[in-house]
Amino acid sequence: MAVSVFTPRTEWAADPARTRGRRFPEPPSPARSDFRRDCDRIIHSTAFRRLKHKTQVFVSHEGDHFRTRLTHTLEVSQIARALARSLGLDEDLTEALALSHDLGHPPFGHAGERALDHCMQDYGGFDHNAQSLRVVTKLERRYASFDGLNLTWETLEGIAKHNGPLTDEDGGAIGRYEQDGLPLAFAEQRDEWDLEYWTFASAEAQVAAISDDIAYDAHDLDDAMRAGLFDIADLKPVGLAGEIYSEVKRLYPAAHPSRLAGEVIRRLIAALIDDVLQESKRRIVALGPHSAEDIRQARDPVIRFSAKGEEADRQIKAFLTPRMYREERVMRIMTDAETIVRDLFAHYLAYPKDMAADRVASDEAALVRQIADFIAGMTDRFAIEAHRHYFDSTPDLR
Image (tube, rainbow, N blue to C red; front, side, top):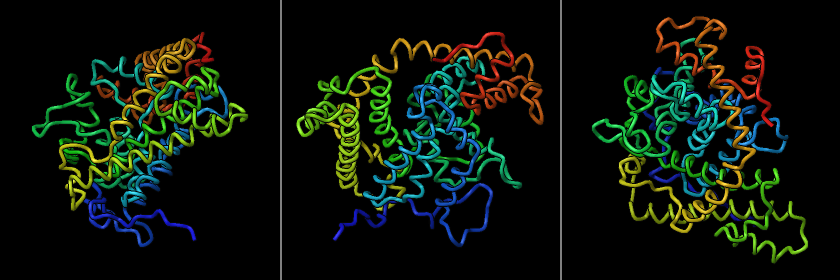
């Protein structure tokens, strides 16, 4: 008889029956919880479909088997649901947050983000997390009664704060935003509907965030090996990943390297998930929460790697940085990608009507933000074709 891994909902999980609601009230669905409706709205959004043709690390035409933002997002969602189920959390809210975490990413991954941030440096900068919030509250236009997707407070909170609090209790920006202040989308949202930026988000949001780390670690290793940037045997000195490789090699000494790689990646994901489960359960017992609000008000996140897991995560990223993220060919492609984004930004600033928008903003700051929204919504393919249309020479991202 199979053993069920389902854990009943805990008292500190987010409860759709107690949601703080939507900014624009809507009648409830007889068939779906509010969090399930949020998840479905995200799946049906234009921004979600565009993730299919947005870069993860390699540009999309490198090959059919490399991750895109969409396949990465689906993998994050699978890991997040597994964690949520084992911890007794709301799976629908967790899935909604996993599926929405990259909606604000521009074309060409972090290279596109760097380029847009540079172009926007005098207008509040560009941040993909803030842009994700902007997408679901303003830029999606699928409903007659409101802009955005009108998601629940809990989903918006998780999109904004899945990496932790954004401000102190007095409203001062902290962490990565301390020096330059909150990105505009976060500041606008605070004025329109307070998401309590000074607290942690729900455990469901924390699960989505750490699932992103697990997916990055495992699947960037997989993509880099597929691209020939290093061999599976090179993982041997890399902490937990190396331990798993040595065990797999002992068990399957004659296996083809591609099968060894698949087995290592599979076991690495399982090991990291198990590490998060054990450490999170320990933290939850120590905190003794009785509600989702107790999770928000805690001094530290409850969903974390153990010290060993954090070290494994650090070692994998340290291994990948010179071999993948800063590898010479990858860096050249990303530099060329930044050029495409900067060129397009300059073009639309000079010729805003080329955006073919229903209305072009007349105020300079609003126009610059409109251009950033337009470019951020582009797929890699659309950005490349637009550049070819307006410029005599377009970099070959290969």
